[in-house]
Image (cartoon, rainbow, N blue to C red; front, top):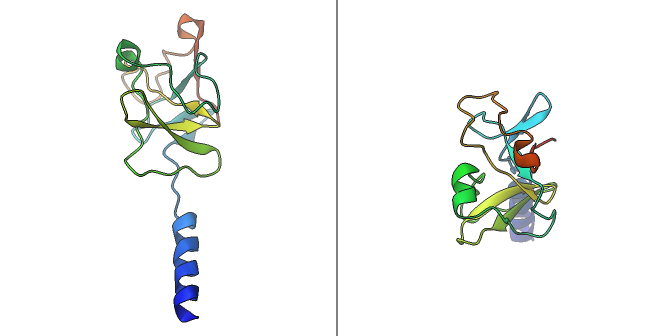
Length: 120
C-alpha cells in the first residue's frame, strides 16, 4: 500500500513538473533564448510533421525538443524527417528565423506570406 501511494505521488509530481519550452512575451511566443518563434502555414496542425526540412530548416531553425521530451496540454513533440525532435504548440511546429538577431526582433513575420508569429 505504501509503495502504491509513493508511486502515485511520484507520478503526480512528474506531471506537475512540466515546464513549457517557450514563454509568452507580449503577444507572441519566444524560445528559452528570448527569440521570437514562428509557425509555417504549410505545416498542417496536428499532423505530427514538419514540412520545413533541409535548406528551409537552415533558415528557420526548429525549436528543438530534447530526447525523451513529452508534451503536455497544448504542447507536443514531433519527429522531424532527420529523426530529431521539435516542439509544437497547438499542433503547429515552432521555428526561429535566422535573420532575427536579438530578442524582440520579428523580421520573419509574414515572410513569403507563409511565416507567422507564433501566438499564445
